[in-house]
Image 1: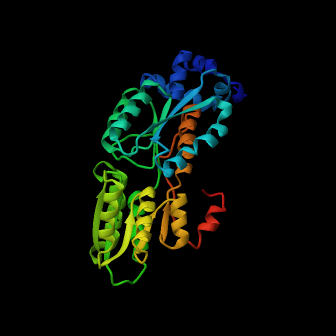
Image 2: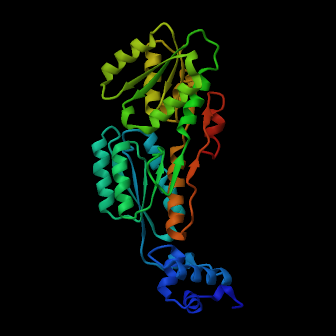
Image 3: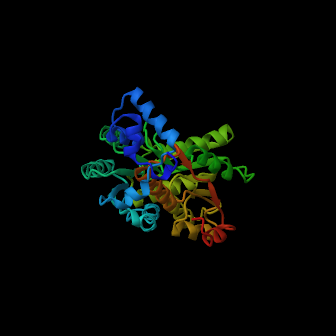
Length: 352
């Protein structure tokens, strides 16, 4: 045929000697098609240069595309509020396609809450799911259900090696820990004690925290005396006493905090107990963290850009569902090191 733009699925079916439904299954890679038949259809598609008009089909469809977003409650942590803030611009970007995004929140500190919210997501029968799988074991249960129901999903913030998502969006957290170790090692101090703080999150069920600590330990090696503190399920009074005792250790020269909210907590206690001589590296551009960065209590922040993670995750999943685009297995964000000297230029840019 001379005009490839006018070729229809019906024409492809006639040329291949198959039904229109068979051609549709081959194009969209769904359902069962005999290998011999599939090759015959693919040969016709290739020879004619046929391209499905996915845009017209999508705009002509009355069915709204529903994506479920499963993240911790943004009211509990500013980091997750930043992540949720990526929803509005994504809805504006994809509004012409009738995209619906259904946020589902769970308690940041309760794995059972994640499991409950995951069940609600499954019962809503979404076209796709974007999830921050901070609870490892409960996330594996969710992935098994999504795989069973053939619901595509994208991970962000935390990568789970056992999962088979369409894509992961975030950072190489092991490498992030190594960067943290490098930043802590910049001072030639005689004090070789390093405290690693995991605040209000259980490291035993958190792949992302383990990866950061492993990276830091591998970079610093045996030249430093590294102690890890898993301060989960402790009240503010107990936390104050425990951290005060740690900060006043005579050989402590540096501290690394694995979470953004934890960074704020440790910075607050360092100032309260007059321990700002200890070098502090933490995460993310929360308002309180920026305050302590400007005051010099925090030396460096590693920015994870949660808002952009959400936007990229929605974009990837929507492109896959609407246009059948193949997604990168991983989209790793750069490890952005923010200091007192460059934070102003960063905040005034459009990068974040």
